[in-house]
Image (cartoon, rainbow, N blue to C red; front, side, top):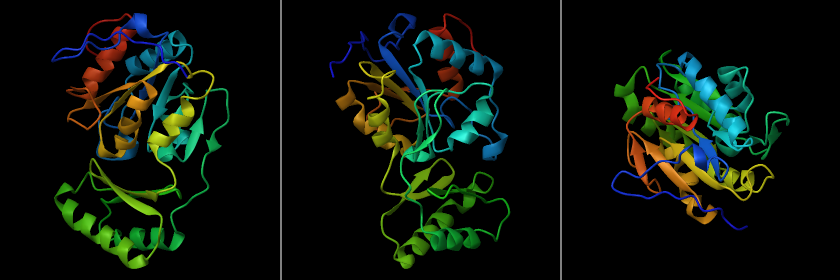
Length: 262
């Protein structure tokens, strides 16, 4: 596949893609901590009305080459961004939807061992402020409301996984969350597949992510002729860092031709 060049005259603060680039790029956006501000619980995040507007406009102007890349399942993304139905990678790469008109496809039937999921969930039951999301293909343990227990929880989960003897499982440490998932899929490999689909092919991916759980995407961008930006902190593979999700939303608004912070 021959890449379409995107002219970005980089300096100490790289120029971001502009509206004229939308026909040549594919916008790939992580959700929590990237385009949405973090909240005390996963269900309490707020989607600004202006962000829905930006995503709708950019999806149309890019010819459909705008996708969400998230640890959330696609059904949950649809609830968050309703009435929008966007191309999406969900569950850290376990599922994919090539367009809003397509059905969600399960890319891998790999699930985390049920007994292991039950053990971890039971071990977290001592404090109701710990939220355990069981997605079958992965398990998310959120400790946003008790961050002072971070190290103790990480140690407890690592010990349970090690003693279980379960193979092909990995532990990822995100922002106030521990993710336990199968090693048979990841966001980066799913992005490779997405970029071969008709809508995204022959475009340069532009990815924005905020966390170590996005590392697999940043690692494949160069081979795909793409570039990546991180949020709030530097991540290997990112060429520049946004200060906050607010700044990311502002940039998306400027891509639509709108100005002013949201």
